[in-house]
Image (tube, rainbow, N blue to C red; front, side, top):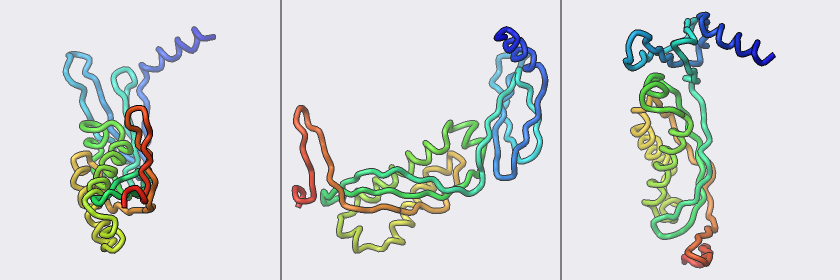
Amino acid sequence: MEALFAFFDRFFIWIPRVILVRSTHGGVKWCMKLWDNAEPDVTELKPGLHFYWPLTSEYELTITARRPVDIPTMSILTSDGRSLIVSAAVVFRINNVLAALGERNWDVDSTLVDVTQAAIFRAIRRRSFQQLIDGDVDELIDELTENTKKSLVKFGILIESVLPKDFDKSTSYRVFGETTSFITQENVE
């Protein structure tokens, strides 16, 4: 039976296939040139019907419509040494599928999380705990959104907003050599 499946797998790569790209999606198709060893042709797949030949090409689709992604919680020390737990949500869309999938990036969500966490870290680390509590929330949101937007535009990702969700004091455990140091709010003050 396995031999029959292997035969069909090898046989069907010779038959062109149809891809339906929904209006909320986009994609990239890579086509190898059989006649030389040149780089593959990279083509953007816009919504609609497209053909591909499994023998020489492959494709990947992604959601291009507006969508939110949760940024995992992380522990950050403020400029005055207080430990905070911060998480956020990012609302974005993909405006350049070739940059998002075909040229500069492999995993849109991982890149989005990495860059957003770095922006959050820089913004929180520059401020004291009191500045974060007393400060203008809209100013922090604008700073996070602008910094993340600037960093992700080269990956074909358009950021609409970065919104902090959870923001609380934390207890951090740091391991130093063979001992564990407990950093609490009482230890810092």
